[in-house]
Amino acid sequence: MRRLAAIVAGLLLTGCANWEAHQSAQELRYLGRPVDALYDEYGVPVGIAPTSDGGRFLEFQSFRRGFECTAKVTTDRRGVITKIKTGGQNGCVTPL
Image 1: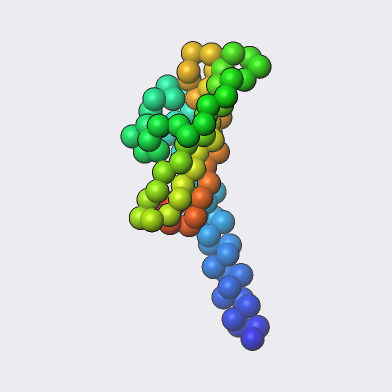
Image 2 (image 1 turned 180 degrees about the vertical axis):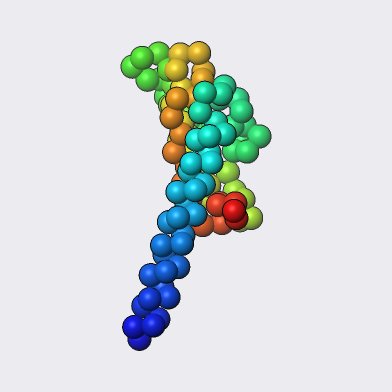
């Protein structure tokens, strides 16, 4: 039983590490770029709202290999990405 618990804990930690690596890769890829750069990977936004500083908050949703993947993005008033947070199911993470 302890061995099974250790295996499950290891798998969970591996999944978290993969998500952290995926998030870091997405930040490197998109921060400082125009929001249009996300369209190829995520499609058009499913939600857009203005921010108090004149920028926008956009939410993207896509499906990869049958898994729902999301990106929540904040831009400045010029449409340049200043913040990105990705989420979804484990199938969204591209194997490293």
